[in-house]
Image (cartoon, rainbow, N blue to C red):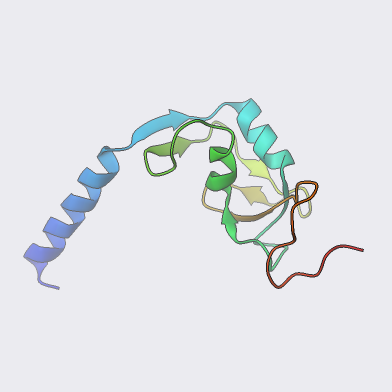
Length: 107
């Protein structure tokens, strides 16, 4: 990619990010989201959902409209690893929810 093209692409990326609303998530929302996950990418091969998606389930904003700011980092309930908005997690199953594809139901 030519330097001029790279500079334009970089600027367009910055402008696109500026169109999003910055939302500070409360500590309570982080705690609620933390309680709704089973594991993180560090301890489960089934972690496939970004933690931000779990956080968005407690908010009324569309994920493509906002950029989340966490006041505290969450921790994985299984391995106690640090979880930020980009960490892949395995959400807990809700009663009556089918297990994710390729995963056997718990016994």
